[in-house]
Image (cartoon, rainbow, N blue to C red):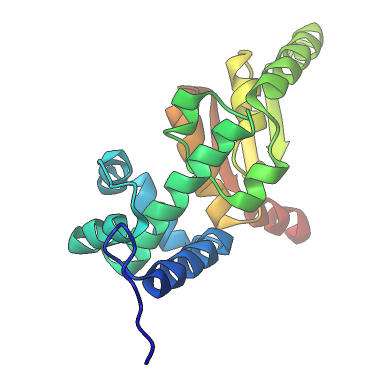
Amino acid sequence: MVRVQPGPSGASWNERRLFRLQFEDVLKMALKLEQLEFLASSRGAEALAMEIPDNPLSAQKKLRKSYSYDEACAIGHMRELRTRSVAFAKFSRELAGKMLLSDELLQQCSSLRLANYVGKQMAAMASAAGRSEVMDLCCGLGGDAIGLASAGLDVLGYDISPEASVYSAHNANVAGVSERGRTELLFSLLEICLSL
């Protein structure tokens, strides 16, 4: 006879292990465009700001009362990534707590400190040339675009991924520089070039 002893949280070891494996799979997944649009919405912002228990099973149970499975996964995914971005010292705790992030794009993204430094250097070069506009090709999360816009440049970010366009537009907005930049899909630029 096999008996499973409940853990301190009331869930059995097997239940906690299964949830942990599912949660690790969630962290490896790439968020779908619909999930990103949900997170960028006011309803998603409220979900990300709400108090959620530290216990993963309790957190999932609370989220599933108000949100679909995909939305609950996206909320858990984003909350975990925001913690990681602070650990990597890429963004301030305040900014990371508002940004939309992806594990893959976070690894490729410049730190805000580096982006601000590059932005100041680019602003000086652009000013010397009598220009104020720059393009950020493959803008991803928008970290470089935020640094460029913070230095006073007008930024046009392009990316081939519709998801990256949602990330960068949202992140520029929460960083307070959305008036100095915009993002567009790169394939619209490629279509224009190919049609010439």
